[in-house]
Length: 166
Image 1: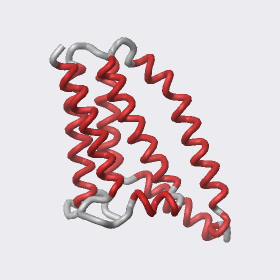
Image 2 (image 1 turned 45 degrees about the horizontal axis):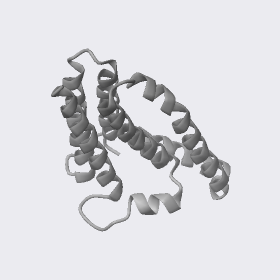
Image 3 (image 1 turned 135 degrees about the horizontal axis):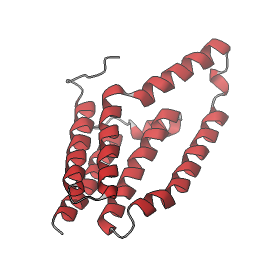
Image 4 (image 1 turned 90 degrees about the vertical axis):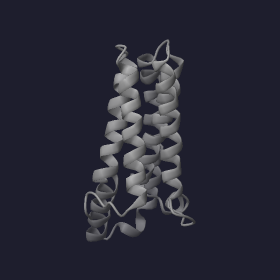
């Protein structure tokens, strides 16, 4: 699996939307906002993740280990447990993120959209087939998960640009 596949419209869309969101957050951070600076880094990490596909590489590595040990067929309870951990961690991180964006409603909106992306990527990494079937359902040029990235990035960009106008 190559790192960057310029013919992959889904990967290129993710890179573009998160790069634009990182840039918009960096613009908003010029006023010295810790929240926007953090959000710029988060968006840049999302962009990098789309390039390197660590979530898929880790998933493939785990699947190989499970197959080698004959545990692959019984992985569903573990996947459900991992999804529960993803949900618990996401909920536990909300107060921290809310504190970072304290007093900045637009940053909080961007944080919420960023949480949606981070949670989506974590769910992709766990790769429960019934969930994957929805996230990767064919039906157009872009996968449903990519529409989620674009929507979340649009929210982050709009919030960041709104913050630059204050």
